[in-house]
Length: 396
Picture (cartoon, rainbow, N blue to C red):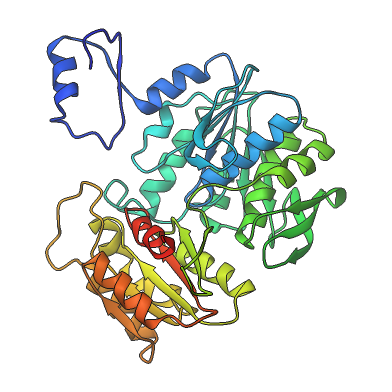
């Protein structure tokens, strides 16, 4: 497949012994990292890079919807499929580009944005960044890629992200729900399948925002998108209209439907960090008062080793939990590290909660089918292939 290639583009997920990569090297074909290719595509555009530990895909999709509504015809590159696009990419004809900036391997320093968002920074990707200090250093390097006339929007509810304000010599603006910030969300109302708030800039109301997707965390995501949109000159009315039209991202609290012949809602979500698990369960609880049965697939041995104890309290809202074996994401196993660590952490915090550690997806599906009652919810969580369980539960 590389016979006629001028350049071969790879991501960090491609192993070094991949046959096409080896053949490209043998033929002396230039090999670019995916982030280098995105950086090249961003040159000469009004590019916005969306970074942060959580919410990147959703914020990127929201910004795409805002710019599309504003008539900018943007190109949008997301790390997951947008429901509106049925793809992770929208090819636009305008000069605007929105790109999700992946911090997991540090490659986001190859991007060439004019504007940026850092929504939050939490310890993660410990295979690449063993400490929070090293991760913050990477975000500093990323922000220093912005030109002198660029703007970075920083989510200052997050203490780690707030620290970036004092370390980068670029123009910044801030957003927050709780902390003092340039942009704030006032009068927040959370309903089962939607939410609303008033977008305020330096104490002045700009517009009312109505979101048609669930979750309090999406208020923060929308505030991030609205902040950079207003900072670059998009009218408040276009911001509100774009956010109202946004339909969501696949595997981000995606309601798949009900189990056949059962009044049991099945929801699929990409959550794989303790903060994301907690947010997904809190969203489920806002509109579901009955039992929430949760299936969780840990992602990466290094993340499980570093954060397993934090997963315990994250599952407090769940009524029953099944934990699978770890999805390796190409990592080598680590002695003593398995999904059992997370199951044990949950039991340590909630000793009366039914928690099961099982390797086999089919066994978990059988368990869930036997355990559910009408009006329960099944919430399937994880960044690996656990979505297969969710889809099988709603299959005819």
